[in-house]
Image (cartoon, rainbow, N blue to C red; front, side, top):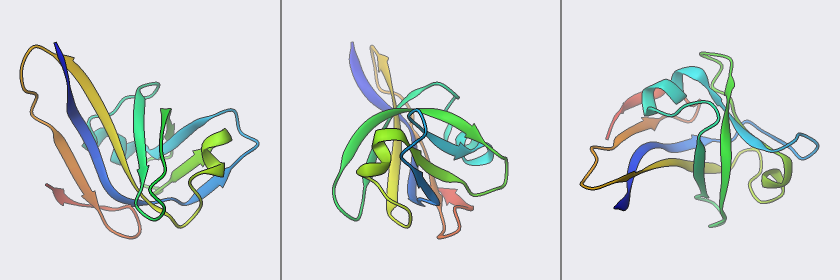
Length: 113
């Protein structure tokens, strides 16, 4: 068994960073669905601006809002305005076809990569 990339949101812009929240990344429900991510799922988040990488879990934000909000301790590493890549993985015996959603600067779906 190996870990394979299954889901990715590429170049999302962080719309908020709330240190006082109890952890997670809030994702627009439409983006979450397009990438194939689920609420509560563990994800790896990589900051394109500063190279920070962290694991957290997904919570759902309002559909169509464009929300990508870092919460809790993660908000100290990844701030508002930073571009991020959000990745979900799957443990499998063989290759997995990844769904990678490219978004624009307003976090609107552009196309699949």
